[in-house]
Image (cartoon, rainbow, N blue to C red; front, side, top):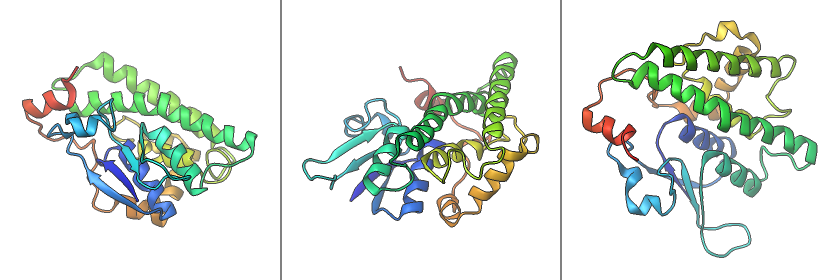
Length: 226
């Protein structure tokens, strides 16, 4: 059994999407970010960067002690290798998937996260930051749109690259983007959204980027820790 420490952020949802696609047995352990559960010692022992998602595999391949993994990209690689799904074995095909996985974790995720933060969570508008991150996300959408021209999926067959990227496109409106500006991306996005595993993943999930009141204490917990 694999324990999945989870909150419904884009990074959390990409791991849930993997499990829905594969049916790999797991047990979800909710982590309330606004209550600061990500800073509790038991969680930090698994995820020292105090971020979700994180997993504990109690039955790793080859046996032995449970394996703990934090960082969503590392988790996807681990799960793909364990399950034999969504990460090719041949060097060239594998590298193509990994390039786009790291593009997401190193570029799209951080930039879209900042765009969402300044559009939704900042206590007051910061025009320079909004403009900076909105334009950078648009540039990244353009990169992805060109990659998807003539391709059904991002890196060949459906892979962990698609699984990693999709949850970061879901809140595109909060990131200041219109998918109508990116027709190949829009076609891909709608196809992924229609997959049964995606529908199950997002059932009952409230967007992380809906503007709503958060208290000063919640803001301190979410954004004020050093």
